[in-house]
Image 1 (cartoon, helix red, strand yellow):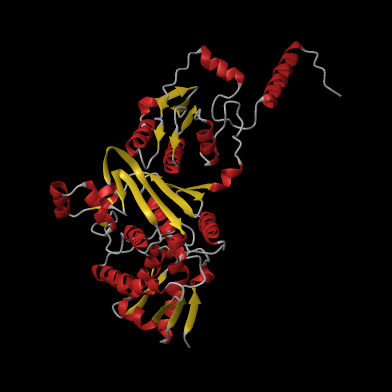
Image 2: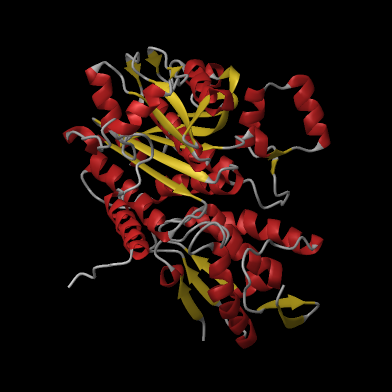
Amino acid sequence: MNTEISIRDFSEYPGLRHCNLSDSSGEEYYHSVLNEAFYETVSKQTVLFVSLDQTAGFAPSFLDEAFGNLVYDFGIDLVQKHLVVISVEEPDLVLTLQNETYIEWQERRLKKSVPKKTKNHKPWWQFVEGTFIKTEK
Amino acid sequence: MKKCYTTWKYRRINKCRSIKGQKRKRRPRTYVPYATSQREVAKMHEQKYQPRPIIADQNFQLMKNTEVVVDFVNRMRKQKNWTKYLGKKYVEIDLSRILQLDFSAVCGLLAEIENLRNKGVQTRGKLPIDEEIKKKLIDSGFVNSMYDAKGNRFETSAHADHYITQTGARRFTLEQNRRISEIVKKIMFHLTGESKHCVKLRNVFLEICANSLEWAGTQRWLIGVKYEEQRVIVIMADVGDGILGTLKKKNYQQLKDFISRSEIDVISGAFDKEYGSRSGNINRNKGLPAIKQAHKDGILKELKVLTNNVAFSFDDVSESVILPSKFNGTLYRWLVDKDCIE
């Protein structure tokens, strides 16, 4: 059964990119919600729906960091197969994610350009060489 | 019953103790940033305290007389213009001669005052003699965290609602996030009569705050909003390295810029994503293009940017100017009216 989550449940006022810059950041959202939710969806071979609606609005850097990290850790193929981002209020954001964010972060994954972490997060899931592993760094 | 000491030694000790206790009670509890009591002012005159005030020009408008205002702000920053008294550093400014003033200049000046306060330098000075300009300055929120010569806060008038200033530093908290949303809702209410979110306008605020926190050296930002009839003027300012100081240029770009491009072309290129960000990552440098896109989409009108030694106009690039002196930071100024949000 497909899973639906909303960023509104995380925060009505999404912040900026990194944890050291703001509360309710994209980095925090990825590590506290998105990473685990996506792993469970992929394990069950279902689809994760993420809604961007009913928040006060996003800084582009929030979405770039949150969904970009997903592409970096799991790869663009898995993300495009198991993730659907919905935004009725701002459809442009979804297009930006698909046309720019996913591609740029996939390039970072191939170059192994490690994303910046500004906080000690609990171990999170990555898809490396065909297997899922939990990493701390 | 009060103890009565009979021995001379213990009487003396008790007397010293009681005098100390009385002095402690007499000491004022609130910390006043500079000399406000009559005694301290008299001491200053006794010791011939001679500040070197920086005098503001009559035409103190950032949009129309940019060079003069930038030069004034830069002189505030120079240590040779600071004075030291009783272990505290001060910079003296004299605004008494101002006859023309705009809100952009007030915000730019306020950003620099906050920056100096962060460095431990207090600002003292004279307000404009012209009553109308003085009232305008007080209502704009310029003196909200300052005191007059008697140590009292300044009284604001009924028109103070026409101005809002909001500052932030180091970390963008949830409270500041909410306040920005409230500012956007208030702008919407002023223009349309409905208090609602405007997501695209809020995104611009967030992007500029993000840039200030991440790249401006001081990690401080300031928002100023002035409500006029049928339109709203928004100023966002930070003090730091400016846009030119945070661009990452490849070698061929550095050579090309040195040979054939002016700073105006470089700023224009930065907003077109021609350069990378200091982080060096491919997915970065989206903030500036997003701001330019918002201007293209009509959300921001008459957008102007003052950064480093460039005053850049988005509406007409030919109006952009290279300044003789450098503005250490970035200042955005734009208008929002009903057309922008419909």
